[in-house]
Image (tube, rainbow, N blue to C red; front, top):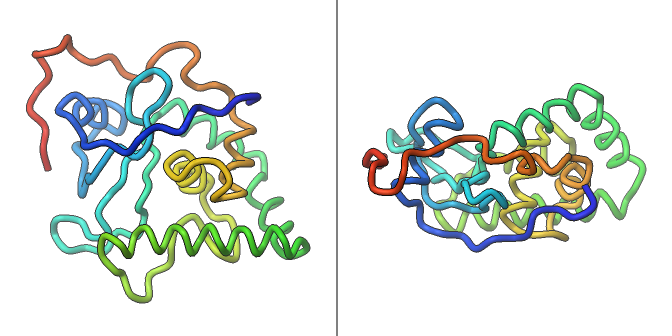
Length: 181
């Protein structure tokens, strides 16, 4: 895409955001802390989750991509071998490997500021391989451009998933169900 979606401020989730999440993923959110990025259509597309779920289970994926349109487009990239190509480049491009390691450190630092998960990896295969483009794109959207080089690359390969409208339709204001964990 020529112009990626703009960085948006981290916000507290509203009842409408929780309802959007439920429609996007077909289940209520677990460990939801914040909306880490908002799609140009206005709906949340990346949420920030707690390092531990409410039952205490470690959940190292701090940034979780929720938009089904973005998820589908990323799935196409993964099916086309983008992860393998990126992982191979990490082994031959020391500058890229260093930048990706810095992205890993950023991810872990952000998660550890909430709660430290000792001996847990960051996510998405960081820092040595590319295991999940969804996580890398979510990190790029939440942190902004220049933090995760492979997330930024994957984001640039995506179509404007929001261009044909929002991925979910919410009830009119005032009729959304109460949200919560």
